[in-house]
Amino acid sequence: MPHRVFRSLLAFVLLGCAGKDGATVAARTASAMQPSAAGGSMPAKGSVGAGKDSATAALLAKADAGRILGSQSATVWLIIISDFQCPFCKRWHEESWEAIRREYVETGKIRVAYVNLPLSMHRNAWPAAHAAMCASVQGKFWPMQDALFRTQKEWEESSDPRPAFEALGRDVGVDVEALRACVKAEATLPLIQGDVDRANTAGAQSTPTFFVGGKPVIGAQPLATFREAIDAALAAKPAGK
Image (cartoon, rainbow, N blue to C red; front, side, top):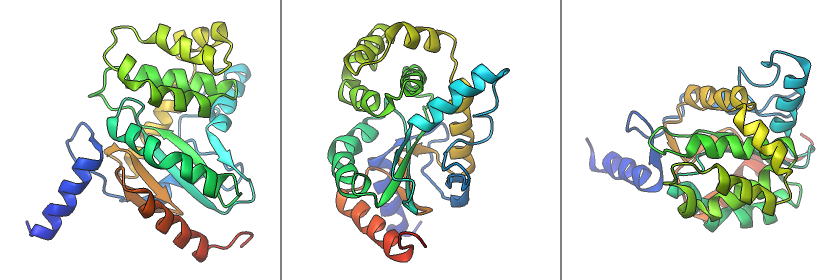
């Protein structure tokens, strides 16, 4: 293997949590991560509409919409493929997310969608995803994801993280009884599984992985890398075009 390629692969490993195959991301089908043009919603197959009845479909639709952030007029998307227990996802969240939100999301330049890829190597990644998406049903996904990453060290090895997640939900204004019922029923499982399916189709085998305007950025790269990628995508696709 050429040294240049080896160094690149090593960098990816150092910046992300490897999936079950121990591989990093190969963006085989970046188009698979593009939001739907109709509703702007991110979910893949097996998500909204997969419920057995209209009530379930409505719940999934709320959960889906809750993890979308930004102006509907924005033409550039940032897709975040992440795992709440991944330490590299936590690092990126702490080092880069707030600046991106402030500079690009709040100013109406981009839209953001969070895609769940809970890795089997993380014992509480799936429960955390359920908690986040059930909070999303109540319009509290983004404060819940902040809380989950902030407290990751406190619940990552817990034999039962549900009380911790409920406490976080209470702190961010979630109806805890409704959250508990949603999590217990795994009501948002079709949405999370749909995320996993689409992320896998796109070649994502580690977290975090990002698509900026359809182009992949692999791992917890520095903030400057994201600014460069977002600015390039904005220049290539001006607002309203």
